[in-house]
Image (cartoon, rainbow, N blue to C red):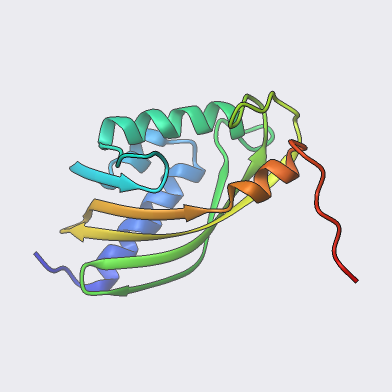
Length: 148
């Protein structure tokens, strides 16, 4: 089923608004029960695995004074049933992240994702994030100095 481009962009925009309002279940409604999410584990995550992953992220990486990290879409474009966006998730490391104990430090995690929609639900998603940048920001290792 092909829906109008503005429809899938509106679906993502609404889901992001729910995320930023602290409504994880509302955000997760973007995903179809057939979801396959690539890029966050060796095997694709299904919808339940995706929900568990985001619950862990909310517990560990929430923004100061918020139950969740902040999510900002910086670019978005679509072709047919696919939507691509560049995003930044930000907050403070309040719990363990990739085996790094909580530091309370702020972070900004840039990433890109491609979402394949069936109607107004995502059925498959491919994501890349710069976890190395986050590890540096939260103090897992010293940043590499810029070369002169």
